[in-house]
Every structure is written in structure tokens, then in C-alpha cells.
Amino acid sequence: MDLSYTPDEQAFRAEVRSWLETHVPKTPLASFDTEAGFEQHREWEKTLASGNWGMVTWPEAYGGRGCNLIEWLIFEEEYYRAGAPGRVNQNGIFLLGPTLMEYGTPEQKARYLTKMASGEEIWAQGWSEPGAGSDMAAIRSTARREGDEYVINGQKIWSTRAVYADWVFCIFRTDPDSERHKGLSFIFVPLDAPGVTVRPIRQLDGLPGFAEIFFDDVRVPADNLLGDEGQGWRIAMATAGFERGLMLRSPARYKNTAKRLLELYRSRDNDILDLSIEDAVVRCYLDAEAYALSTYQTASRLVAGGSIGAEASCNKIFWSELDVLMHETALRLLGPQAELIDADQPPEAQGWQDGFLFSLAGPIYAGSNEIQRNIIAERMLGMPRA
Image (cartoon, rainbow, N blue to C red; front, side, top):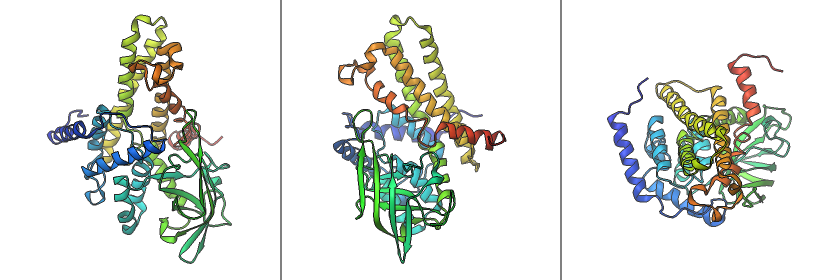
């Protein structure tokens, strides 16, 4: 394995670093779970798009740069190194965007992708329902075809960013006589359409990071259907692959957290009496490096024409549990001080409490880790179903 970068890749890294040093806001943006912060992050997305950095792997025609996955990993490393803002449109650019590339019509790609990359339209994901969380095949919300429209009824819940987003991509049951995985379709819905009601759900920090969405005879054009009617499960599984695979959680995110954890440890190493904390710091650092190397290996295989399948489930379990471990270790280092709010924390301690609370969702979203272990057992190890 060649772990060195080509001259072109090194030049690309230098270009990314230079642009980010010039454009990254000097003052951190407000949380995008607030209305003001959401709009600040939307403006940042527009700034990225001005340099065609909105989604570098997309074709230039859709606001990208046509980069390969290795270049995307380089971009992500520089993005986190620069302390750039979080991506408020991650549901769009990392999940729906690649799905549109694969299943969308030319008209749909032209209509949605450029505005997605620019932050002009922010997307939420509408899959989970009160009775269909990890078991997405239990979806009951319906979309009934009437001429050139679908009439939508039902409810979605735990929809990230939906409070302030512009659109939501959903799975609805279009065949009323169908069961389980059959008869589902993938449809786009504008969140300002008549009959749509969005109700915020407060997180542990009190901010409305999630929402429940109600659809009461909502009418959308039939052109908002992605793929063929009844193909929703297949398309959703492709989207879930992107969610669990490379794009949603780049290794740069965890290497940056591991670096911060090491800095926190060094600031407190004279006060540490429990050697198991030192062991945890070392493990976190090594696991973040291992995840990066594994991702580069996978990206190299994909660039060479390979594919990623059920092993995406391994990927998802690894990064989600690593995220929890890193933040738990940070709180152990902070001791009783970990319970203080950021305003009362020294600079090196700030952000760990919020990060810990968010990390607890990692083993649940993108498919719960219990379900991912079932997938690994059945599809990778060939074990029988229980």
C-alpha cells in the first residue's frame, strides 16, 4: 500500500488550505439548532459554493469540482484542521445528493443538486415514524396517486433539521395493499406546502434539533417521486449505505476529536490518578488513526472501480462507538468540572459536554448498532437468522 500523496494531491491540499484560511469565519457561528445559527450556517454554505467547495466530489455542473474520494478525504482533513463550521445541509449533500446522482432523472438533478450544494435549499430526512424506527419496513404514512399529483397523509418523527429546513425526503407507502418492504416510494416534499405541520422536538440541551412532521392531504407533483413507484425500499437502502459508509462521517472528524482529547489529557496529566484513563486516551487516538487508514483503503478501492456493501455496517458501528468513547474519556478527564456549562469551562474543556450528549445518538441513527450487527452476522459472516 502506497501511503504517500501525489504531487497533484499535495497541490490540491495547498489550495484547500489557502482558501479556508481566508474564508473560515473568525468567530464561531451560533448553533444551527437555533434560527439565527441556522441562517448563519446557510450563509456559510453559500460562501463554500462561491468557491465550488459545496460538495467537491460532485460534477462542476452541479456546483462541485469533480474530485475523487481521496481528494474528498484531503478536503475534509483541511476542513476540520481549519475549524470550519459544521455542515447544516449534511442530510442533503451527504445522503440525498449521492442518491439523486444514482436514481434521479436529468431534470431532477438539474433542479435540486445545485441549490443543495449552495445551501439555497436545506434538506431534512423523513423516514422514522412513531411505529417505524429501526424497522423502516413498518412505515404506514401514505402517498396516493391522483393524476399528476400524490396526496400524502401520515406522520414522521425524529427528523433532523426539519424545524428550519426547506425540504424533506421521505418514504411513503404508495400501494395500500402492500406489506413490509414492498409498495414503498421515495418522494420529496416542500416543508412549506399546505397541509404540512412541523413541530419541534427539544433535545437534551433544550434546542429543537429534531421535529415531528404531520401530513394532512398534502399535494405534491408526481415529478417529486425519485425512481419508480414501489422502488422506495431499494433507494432507501442505497441512501443508508451512504449514511453508514464514507460520506456522512469522514475520519477527519474523529482525528480532530482525538487531537483535542490528547490536548485535554496533556493539560491535566499531573492530576490523573486512574491509569485506565491514560489507556483510554491512547486507544482513542489509535482507533481514530485506524479508522482513517481503513477509510483511505476503502476509498482507494472505490476509486479503482470497486464497491462497498455490508461492510458499511462495520464502518458505522466503529465510528459511532469511537465517538462515544472519546467523549466519555474527555468527561472522565474533566471530572466534576464536566458538569459545568461551557461558559464556566476553560477553553480546552469547552464543547465536550455537548459533544458527549450528541455522541449518544450515534449508535442509534443511521440504523441502530444492534441492527448493524445483525447485518454483519447474516450478510458478512453467513450466520443463520435467530
